Image 1 (cartoon, rainbow, N blue to C red):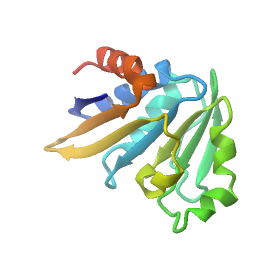
Image 2: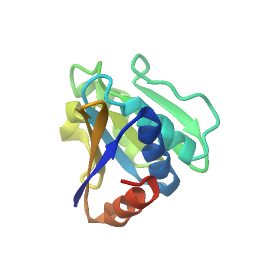
Image 3: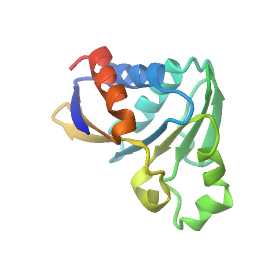
Image 4: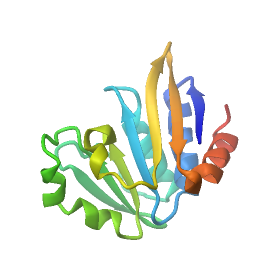
Length: 154
């Protein structure tokens, strides 16, 4: 399933992420893809708020992964600096996937061979002054996609 959401502002992008976070639960994997500055971290911050995370969420570019606690645990990956997929094995990436957390991976296309088959992929592109957000998900995520769009508005 694929659908598109248009964001006219950073607030819209954040609201989209928050709606996603409110609906996400243990075992949700979200692959975020897009060029620099398209809003991947803004969406991640919204997801965290939707999950009830009270800590300040920042991009884990230098740490690769950050952990937050909300109504369920959140693992936030930024794999921009990964030069070899073996680095993901070294940090135990598969262990993070096996748990009962929500997992976000920014720049997920860089580790596409390591991603779980069941995932929600969120692609961000510049669209004039706004953003085009494309959601692709397996059947598991079809209801979630419909509800995100309903909550966040089109």
